[in-house]
Length: 167
Length: 113
Image (cartoon, rainbow over all chains, first blue to last red; front, side, top):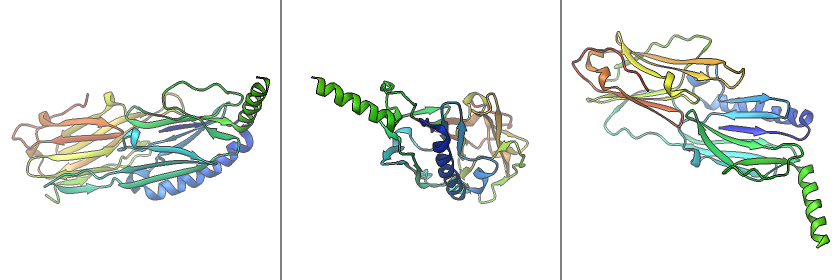
């Protein structure tokens, strides 16, 4: 799962997001099996000129079964990894974790949701969450989650109201 | 059956060691491994010299072109039971699933394509 968050003003918002993700790393690393956690984190944060990208790996879950939603300032991801049924077989090694998976990120005020997308890439589950400063046009790609800066949204609303009052 | 497999994975700094599950019954061994980001073309499931090996390469997004090796190795108590010609594997949603059926044939190598 790939989540891209592009804040309008990177400095303060990236710092907030990095603090949230630091906490997320700790929670996730504690919940993963020791073997899987060794030398690798299932979450990675990358920064570029436009913002930050959060990449999350959730193997063993159908992309459509990953619930991604934004409620207020919280970006929440929920999924469930169900154990495989092997009737009559003896389990010799057990390291994979099962059960409910829940992660949440606190978003800055000027990010909000318009659409979402989930796509499998190279057998990893990735989804995109984007917000680009000054970008108001809707992304037409199917199921894409885009986060726009609130200032842009306010500007759009103000523009929309202005258009309505002109009619 | 309980001692059928023994973990022989050697820890190396550049390797990811995916979490696995292995089951066994009278007919086969079944393996599932968490390998998100693994390229199917680079994935190998082999049984050689009594060692069941799962190996592949994960392309890292950062830095560009970086590759991480992913591997697990398990010693089989009775490797002669398994025929690599009967090894099957598939990669789905970041989980590699493979199985090997018992046989009297010589063990060699199976490649996941």
